Image (tube, rainbow, N blue to C red; front, top):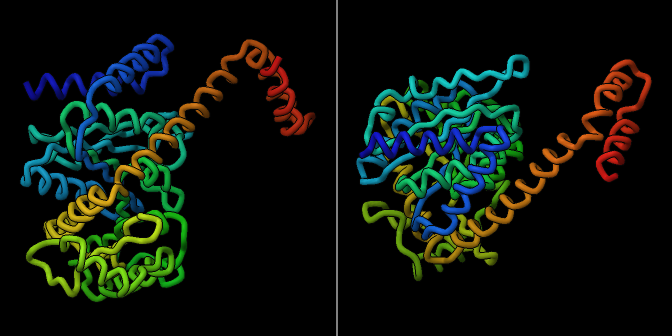
Amino acid sequence: MAATKRLSVAKAITLLESTKPAHRLEADELLHLLQQQPQPKNSLRLGITGVPGVGKSTFIEALGLELIKRGHRVAVLAVDPSSSLSGGSILGDKTRMQSLSVNERAFIRPSPNGGNLGGVCEKTRECMLICEHAGFDVVIVETVGVGQSEVAVANMTDFFVLLHLPNAGDDLQAMKKGVMEFADFVVINKADLDPDAAMRAQSMMSSAMRMVSPYQGEHHAQNAHASMPMAADNLDPKEHYLGVSKAHDLQIDPTLRVLQISALQNQGIDVLLDRLMQYQKVQLQSKAFEHKRAQQAVSWLWERVQSGLKTAFMEHPRVQAALPALLAQVGQGLLEPSSAARELLKLHRI
């Protein structure tokens, strides 16, 4: 049964990623059928990013195994970069998650990003929907790991986790905005290799998190104590609390949003997961979770509109007929790119 479901999920994702017109129609029909079904409740979508070599695959495997131990079913959508020359991708994430990949309660799907910006695939949102309807209540999206531009995944997941190395970057690097602005949690991985450097990195990242999303202080802390559950029964209430901003967007004390872990040694994974789950629980109670999902749905709509317009433009007969000559003129310096673009857009409007 598990093998059949796993195969059907893989085939559904393959159908979604296909560029053949007939497959696109089938994929649209499949998505329409899924939308008619009751939406899965209390699913959790996690976005994971970090520079190459930070240990994303090791971290995801440790996190996934801990989630399974707690009774969850985990799907991992691993995005691999596509070569700008050949267009191919290695798609070797399963080999780096050997224990998780053979677990019956896990599903791992590596996909090429196809040159798509933001560190994700064009069909990542649809793939998450497939996984949730297949019974996976936690969907983890691993980005390609290209740095400060990977913010697209933050707009399609409930929590965005940024992995960092103990010795990577200085104070100025830590202060940079961009991806830091979207991170719900910053995780210092491989902390066991250099504890002193990990402590310094945690301090720098905590300061940076305060700057990009400053915590509101004791006023919210008092409200949190009065109306919200603590992060976990075994944690000190004086050190672990959650607050709610005026915009109903939950924030967590920056000292709790930055953690040291060692994914390889399985150290700190349980603490991170406790905070993630409690954060989700409070968001559900405050309706912030529902509000964010609604925003993501609107964003998804506009992404599909833009993608559809681009496809319609490239498939327009007049555009296809004029494109080779215009590209040649631009390449030879005989025509300004802006003029060529206006000409193509004019042909599309005719």
